[in-house]
Each structure stands twice: as C-alpha cells, then as structure tokens.
Length: 47
Length: 170
Image (cartoon, rainbow over all chains, first blue to last red; front, side, top):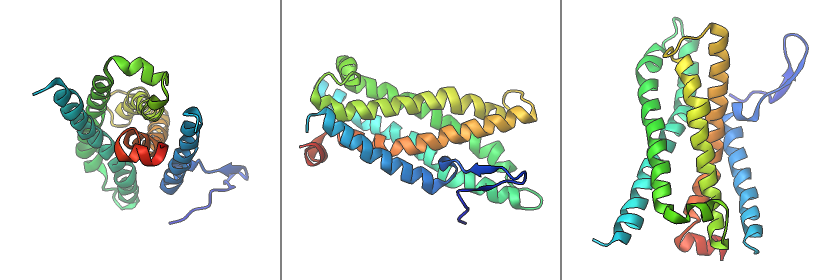
C-alpha cells in the first residue's frame, strides 16, 4: 500500500513521514548514497 | 598451505560468509518481519506473539554475533594495514576504506542502538510502555539505517578488488 509521505495529523499539524519508514524510501536512499559515495571515492582517488 | 591461502583465501571466505549471515538477518528483519508483525497485529486476536517470542530473539542472536565475526574477520584481512585503510593513506585504499567505515557504522548501530533497545522491546530488560515505544522506534530507525548503509557498503566491498575494481575505478 502506498501512503502519502506528508500530510496533516489529527491535531491539524503538518507532519512529514521519515524516509526510512518506507522500505522503498530506504532502498532508494541507499542507492543515492552509493552514487554519491562513488563519485566522492573517484574524487579522492584523483580520477 | 601458505599463509596467503589462510589469510586472503579462507579469511576472505569467512568474512563474506559471516557478512551474509549478518546482512541476511538484517534484510529478514526489514523486508519480512516488520511487515509480518504489522499484518499479525491487524488480526483479531493479534497473532504475532510467536514471532516476537521465538523467532526474533533467535534471529537477533545470529544477527549480532555474525556482526562481531564479520568485523573481526575484516580486521584480520586488513592486518597491519587497517590504520592506513581507515585513514585512506593510499589511493588504492579508498574503496575498501569507505566500505570498512560503513561496516563499522553498521556495527556501532547493532550494539549501541539496535540491541539495547530490542532488549527492552522483547522484555529481556524491564521497561515501561512509553520507554518500550521509544525503544521500538530507535531500534527500527537504526535497523532501517543499516539497511540503507548496507547498499553502498556491499558496493564498496565488492569494488575493492578484482575485475569489478578495474571496471569501476580504472
């Protein structure tokens, strides 16, 4: 089931869902982190 | 049998074997158990007690002891170059250094954030309902963080040698 990442709670307060609450959010964050670290590693290696 | 066979052959094999148990259990918790417990809690009456009582403690035991074995075998493999790798002393150490740091952060999360809080959730140490709720949230987010970190960690472990390294960092 897909749920909204952000919305208003019962008290009318705007709340955002933590990205790690979603399994897909976790996997996508892991892939993005991999890409960022890959380019960082290349930079550190002078490539 | 030469020392290289024991050190780099059997040592690397055991490092990967223990790492598979560790990350395998991590993926079981995140991809299977969390969802299964959610579904069990939605039933009337809730049916997740068996998982919490019998499955989770056993899986957590393999999970945390495999993390120790993996890290120990990792340091055994690095040997006296561990300091140089963790400080990226040479260009060639960058991929494995990043992988090692990610693994060490995951190890920290297991023993400092996940396990102490899971003990409260599972009732192995006494905690009030509020404290249990907080512990459940911290353990969950630390476990999810480890799942996220495992993706680049595995990439850099694999990218640290052989044809994969030549392909990615040539």
